[in-house]
Length: 447
Image (cartoon, rainbow, N blue to C red; front, side, top):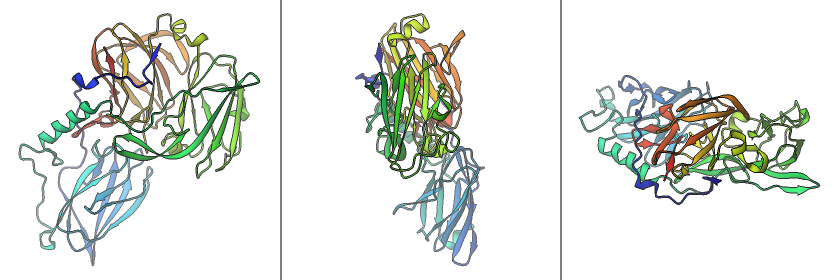
């Protein structure tokens, strides 16, 4: 059985990746906002949603301090930032419903970019413009050029074409480190022992784009753990972060004291501390998940999650699903502080699933994000064969599968059509904008 987690040396760029999706840029009715000026300053009311900054266009006078009252009215965390040309001024990361004030010293006459700094959000539409003019012109009419060769956010048609092409030609782009790497246990008195280390780290989601993340053993997602039915398992979690944490085995049957919920089943693991989780595996073969259950909106959103497999006998998934499995792949869906990611990476740094013509491909899908993601595969109808670790008595065919937070699915794909076939979330602002594809996009490569 071949696993795509080992980087495939294939010339993916030799194919044309046909992917028609709407470029959603968000925004208001196009009327620029002008400042409410007080002595020495100009004040603006700003709203953040998915995926727009409102107002999209701001008209301000030079010579005044600019005060932005920013509120996040969306359903995930956002920031508001301005590229002043000498650096980026930005708010803290704002959770849902939070507000902040951003003061920016007087800017010279010119055009400045506003945007959300969360990975992928600007490409999805959370970008706008600040036009600073001489004070005498501050009430004049300002509009965005729509002169045939530009779009609503001043991206030319040529720039759109070049952006889309560059992303495809770069796929699969190199980045530092990969998640989902197998972790072999040590054996102590017949018990399989895994050591996980929770760490704060800088994680490269796309070439040159590093985000503040949290991972196990330096990975996002954390290492892949594999055991057999009936095994005695011990996981030692060491906390090297600056905040407490715990470990929850999602979907697995464990003793109550091993459930990993702070102040209900255990005390939090303080920085520098550790906790040992131990139990006997009683669940059927399938995919399960481990993740933090402390400050989980941040910790899981930043990458503290990983795959836990109870494998069928001798790791033979073919016996479980009644047909030969040639390629096995894991695909974790994530969103939040790391942006929209698959296995911790955003396109074009996502890794393809590589198969040979005639192969049967098993894909384990898991969503440890905060949003629902309908995953769509071009060119194939796949067979949904398991949900939440249980083999389905009534399998069904689909080409788009809704994966809610916390859910896992196993799907089978019969790779009977050669080419590069896009596989992506079909909430289009999670995958493509005017500058091309980003975020939750990968491909099934059949060669």
